[in-house]
Image (cartoon, rainbow, N blue to C red; front, side, top):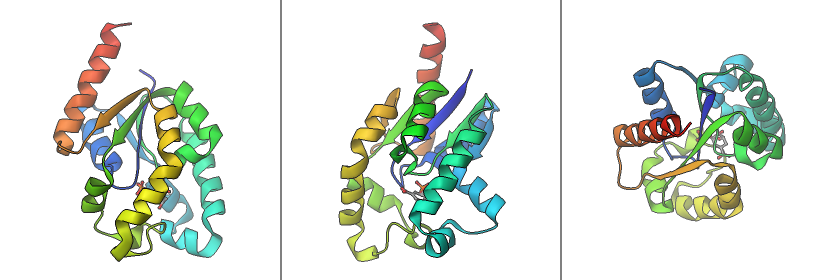
Length: 174
Ligand code: S3P
């Protein structure tokens, strides 16, 4: 199989689900944010603060395009990866992309630490900040995804099971 990409908003469980799925089916797991932090030896929030969002996006795109050249990996991407057309092209062509969708209400409940998420600056206005980001990105998540899973009423293990079902069906149909 080629790569499996998980996309979705902050709090959509991309990393939690990606890690569990990789353990279950014994595939390599790549978390793009973690990879950036490891190589730069900086926290994502510090990168935003020191160099700005535009520079972070360049790093994100460079890391993503480089890492996705190898196959058989499960990727957890940062929530904003779909903003760059080059990344959307990779998501469409270099594997299977699954959009973990959830309501703003659910995302806000799952996000506990906004310090780790520089785009969410105000704990008291979490929902309106998420709503604004969602409006800008909705189209790109939908355009980039081969499959969408609504996770509002699921736990991470159930999401993993849904992905396994999707992959089995995909395998059977080819
Ligand atoms: C971002 C999401 C974060 C991280 C950065 C920007 C975004 O990743 O890449 O703070 O633009 O949505 P998670 O989606 O894993 O929180």
